Length: 457
Image 1 (cartoon, rainbow, N blue to C red):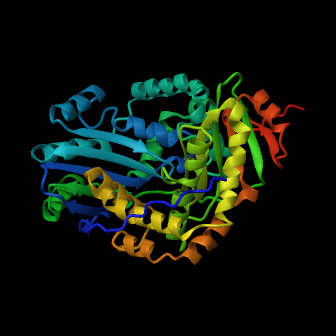
Image 2: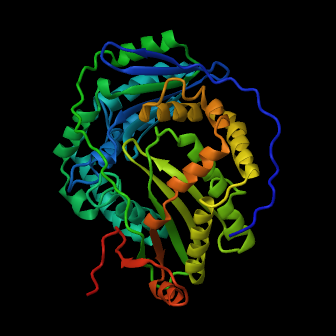
Image 3: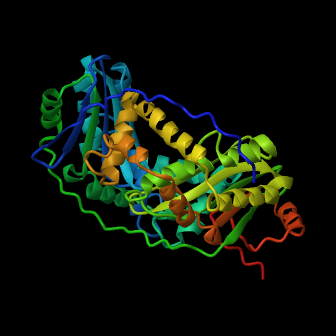
C-alpha cells in the first residue's frame, strides 16, 4: 500500500448559484421540469420514463432495447428515412435510448425550429409505426452482432460482473441488448405491448433546458402532447440482490496480453444517509487521479494506465466497483494491491485526504452545470432516485458537514472485502500459474462470456 504524500489542498471556494428549476404538471399527468437559459438560442428536451431493461420479461431480455430502436424507425406520417430527413433539415437531433431503469427520448433544437422538432418528437412518442419490415431488419442486426460481444474484453467483464454480482434472477443482472435466444423469442407484438405499457403521460417527466420560459414550454407541450391520454401499465420490478461469497470469476480469453478486472460488491442505494460520506471515501480510494488506487497501481508500480472506483446506483439497487486493465502477467499482483488499498481504507484515513476530497467535490460541483445536457442529467438523477427537492441546493452544505468520524465509519462498513466479487477476463492458464505463487483465499469459478458457470467436471 502506497504512502501518499501530503496533497495540495484547495483553499478558496467558488461563488456559484444553481439554476432555478420550474415545475408544472399537465392535466394528463406529464410532469415538466424547466430551466430557462436565455443566452444561447437552443433548447434541449429529454423525456424520461420507466421502461429500461430491468422491465424485460424473463426469456425476452432485450425487449426494452428493441423498443427504443424501433420508436424512431418510422412514426406518424413518416417512414424511417423521411423522419430522419425532416429532423436533419431542421438542424435538430432526436435520439431514443435506454439504461437499466429508464427509457429516454432526447431532443435538441434551435429555438426557431423548436415547435417543428417537438411535433416530430410527438410522432415518435405517440405514433411509432412499428412496421414488421423494420422490426425484422433491426432484430436481425442485433442477432448478427451479439456473438461479437465476446471480442470486447471490457464489455465481457462488465456483463459478467453484473450477472454474478446481482444474481441470475435479478433484473439488473442481464445484458440490456439481450441474448441470442431471448432476441429470437421476441415478436413484434411483444414490442408493441411493451411500448403501450410504458410510453404514457403518467409515466413521463419532460426535462427542458434552454432558451425558453415556463409559459411557452407549457403551451407547446400541452398543444402537442395534451391529448395523449394513455395510462401506463407497469409491473413492479424489485432487486433482491444480496452480498455474495468472496469469489474469483474467470473468463478464459486465451492468449490475451491483458486482463480486464472488476472488483466489487452490492452496496446501499442512492438515498442512504451516508451518501455524502461515501462520495468522500470513494474520492480518496479511486475517484480521482490522485486517489490511492491510481497512485499505487499506476504511478508507483506501473501496473496499469488507469484505475478507478465508483459507487454505482440504480433505481432499486447499488454496487461498488473497481475497474482496471493490466498486463496478463501482472493480474494477481494487481488484485493484491487493489485489496490492500481497499483494506487500508478501513484502517487509516488522514485529515489531509478528507479535506482534499471534500474541497475537490465542492469546487468541481459548478462544472456539473456548465451545459444544458449536464443540467438535464442532474435533474434526471433527482427524479430517478426520488431525491429531496432541495438536494442540488444542499449538495455543498452536505459535503461540507461530513466529519472525519463519518468517513472512517462509512469506510469500515461500505468496503466489504470479505464479500468481494472479482471478475477477470484474461488468459486463465497465466492467471492460475500466478495464483500458485501466492496465498489468496479465493474460490475460483470459470464462467462463459455471459457469466454462467462452466462445469468442467
